[in-house]
Length: 477
Ligand SMILES: Cc1cc2nc3c(=O)[nH]c(=O)nc-3n(C[C@H](O)[C@H](O)[C@H](O)COP(=O)(O)OP(=O)(O)OC[C@H]3O[C@@H](n4cnc5c(N)ncnc54)[C@H](O)[C@@H]3O)c2cc1C
Image (cartoon, rainbow, N blue to C red; front, side, top):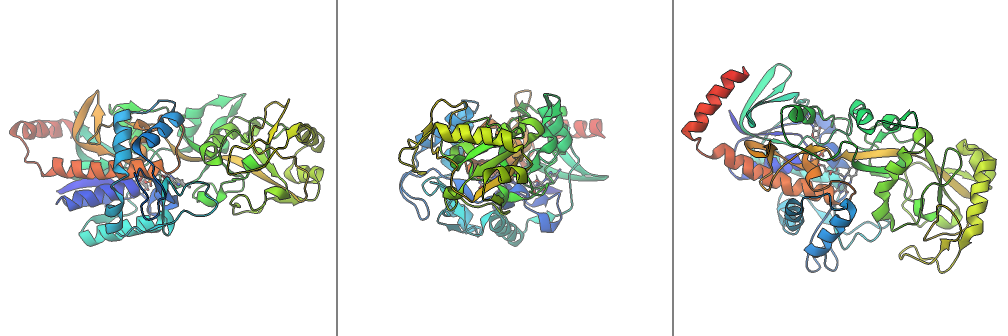
């Protein structure tokens, strides 16, 4: 029997597998996807958010624990577990040498990513290179890896792990780490979680930015089996992405980042939110939800020539026209309604000194909703428009864990079942998002879970425990 079974093949799973192996455990990793799609959402990542007290290779200045914590507190509105959050934050200050040892390389922050050079360390080659490096290292260390192996359910007895089931195959292990992501690719579950708004199923037009394999099958089964639940099923990271993006795995390049430089209107040609409320990295993750609650879950980001060059262009070119009514027609909007909105917006702009790098003084007056920064009239052709859909990144509903990453059942930590990554991210992220913290959470708790699982697997079984296990096994059979 293998010592540690790791379920999943993304960042959290790989960190767990490597740590468990380094601790001397034999490790089997089960990845639902075929080899060519391995790595889950982690292949789309670009960076992790790191605490540091002084400049380090690719990180400028300092980003101390307290500032990181306050940033998290703000975005989550306090829906976070301080002990676990601080654990992840501190971990981010020490994990990079270990990552480098396993082949991950870092690079300076990319231009166009807006003020992230201080807080976020970027992976050379992105998340795909990170995942490939970890898989390579895992194979070199003797971790056994199986692809095309989606686990349907876990066999649990009184909160203890016994085996994982893949179809009719029963795979036993002494300890297990679940790191199988959220349920963002499960369209039925999303529908149920988001419900209806003004007669429309909110989630029906969601596009999944990452993997199709995070279906949450195991999460659902775990919650039904009595694992303590954390988080709200409708809370997630969701951004506005190009409506032409593929249903899965469009990744980062389908994000539309020009919202703060223009206006956004809905299907009726009306604005519905302050596009210039705050810096884009602090606001991009609210726009998926905002678009989700517009009619037909669609919106349109409109800019003029002045915005070009000030944001990272999405992979698909926008609709382009030399006058605004033509642009409206190209986007399928009523030109009269659209022009009323643009004219009201243009007339209300109080232009001061435009500066996209600060919260500048260009704002609207007498307009609802206001645009509070970077408000310049749309007056310089050519004009561009991008249709937007909600793009879901990952969900926050998960299982409750503690500092050892042990999964809790009615408040009691499991002896040998641990969780890491998105499947337990809700412990730290009750709502909101801080760019780069997904990988921080997965790395911290993946490494902790791997160590804990190895410890549980390699510890001599107490006679009582053995008895319980035997009784439990026959009860489960
Ligand atoms: C486009 C995009 C960009 C992102 N950019 C960043 C970024 O720059 N920085 C950041 O911090 N975060 C980013 N995130 C979020 C980030 O991906 C996650 O928080 C983190 O990588 C998740 O790691 P994970 O291991 O928990 O999940 P995943 O990487 O999604 O891995 C889950 C794994 O579980 C497997 N799996 C699922 N179900 C089963 C099953 N039943 N049996 C076996 N295997 C199963 C999947 O195939 C997958 O391999 C981004 C996400 C997306 C989609």
